[in-house]
Image (cartoon, rainbow, N blue to C red):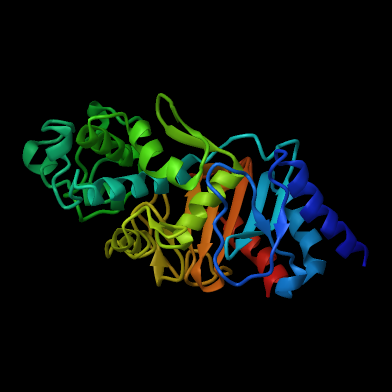
Length: 357
């Protein structure tokens, strides 16, 4: 009984206290999909008890999140907030870094540019970037398509993180090697050149403003990283759960989004267009050429797709459960901050399963 009482305080007190004056939670038990209004922080909620979840396992989940340096955590079902909590002084109004989870924003924006007739992902990258954008022989550079940049199969050296021409050297023919690296950032240049505007301007107009996200791109020396609030990360997760549709409007072309969350090449079947894919027969991880057998996150549903960033920034999208899960924070293991995939995912999903199953 005590846990149930604390849970009600947590769900309604915490959501209400982290909100502006017009965003009081509205509990609705409704199986239809919900989209929070654009321009408002109002968000419908649903209780774990109404979903017949195991409420006794919520406190252990919360303790695990605290122990693993989390800043925020959310679970949505049918678009409605079931759990939302903030830790370590972090609040709902504060932005946090997405790190490589933001690659999925670049993928989505690239798809929007294609549906608007600005690019074709099967064209050479040099059609948009100009020739001699790499430090490779022209015949090798011309093998690299926009699709290769989306799938991490450009054949460019992945050991150098700074994306400058001198570092963009040949390792293998495009399409023959999967290697996780920062060269995906050239997609931002593809969008900028084809739209004759800054990437962030195009992103803001065609994606961010359409679904009511906040946030900004921080352009650094090596990394270009998106920062936003947790709820904005959840909005993008909800868009993704609905195959690029937001409240009846197709923001990202449905066929492109389906391609994005489908195996994009035969080398690493657990990778789409900058999305990680669960439930495949094998997977690769950043900074290695090793192929590991089995599923990326065995404890997670097989149909889960994920945006994964360094220090365990996560968007998990699970169509079979109409669920979106968000985790932001510092690295769960400060000694191993990793680039994307980590053992944290499997342990976290073990905790989530104890609540939802």
